[in-house]
Length: 61
Image 1 (cartoon, rainbow, N blue to C red):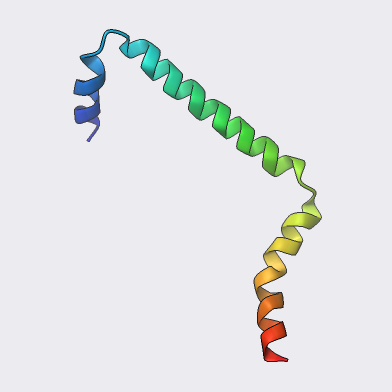
Image 2 (image 1 turned 45 degrees about the vertical axis):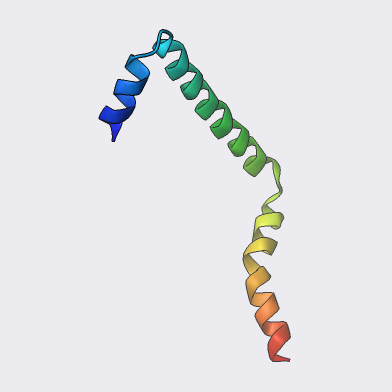
């Protein structure tokens, strides 16, 4: 599969720029997602992890 993409990218004039842009986008996305996750309080994830259990408990009553 990578050989297929290498043939496509190597045939372009600005292959290094495209590869650098893809890496930059990946790094920015990763940093952004890490920021979003770390910004939320710990209680948020505790509440979210209990949500499915709360719904099932309400249905049984």
